[in-house]
Length: 393
Image (cartoon, rainbow, N blue to C red; front, side, top):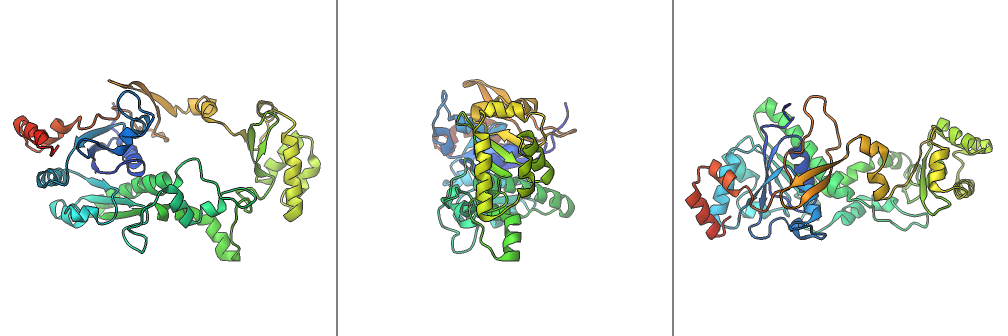
């Protein structure tokens, strides 16, 4: 069997809910040994968020495959000592508490690098470790709002719309953290030193404004919902209702795609007016709207199947999960769980020719690997049993 890309890398993951667990799942899929350090008794709160399967949340099961679970009370002296022992053999520590929490536990970066100078320590927080908002609570919708993303995401009347997925949590937090951690691993190969990484979900989301920012810096015009090239300003890049109440997405930005669409619908007269502005743009959008209302979504799929014009149906979940391209790319896989049965999962979203991601194990039971992990630190079973009785684990 081929070795995974991150085989031999050990991660101590103290994160909960979505951003951190998504990050550590990506690392685990690529072969890292991820030890999920959870609160004694309750564990990751995601375990309790409905819908519950037989024991754990379906949400938890979708985010925590390929990980081991160690239930450890870090508020106890012995719990912290055990964690520090694990740090000696770890490569990465990932945490997602508010700034300062780990320092109060004496488990901050300065504490842990004295134990292991090669440790890579990554903190994921809402607004970062410093600044006036560092201690402020927040969620995805707040980070997107402050970053300006919500301000350009919405309807033509200017009303902001909450995105259907957590952009800041996953893209600005979890995925960015995974990218930065791997960059630090590469750096450590060169220097022999670990480092601290401060990932703020708001910062990560803000960085997604790149092309919008370039335009704003050049012309000083504040972007607005449905007023930009890629958010509904033009007829060639928009969402349209169909005869059966569904929707089609038209992404015919380039002239050749727009021309192909216009020819396919018998409206060659519209080719020359692709990028008209103002009232003419609104009139063109209305005209294309009337065209799409003439057929059902499936009829449009059939009519444009062989037309190179970037037009696709807006799928609901049932349609997306059965789409031939998604099925062909093996993006939905099944895992066997000893208690929960067969669990569908979203697969790792990239293919490696030499070190492919692999599904090794389902999400763990809380504390499932306590004895395995603690025995590695030299603890014998009687001591492990005593720690359990004292609720250290």
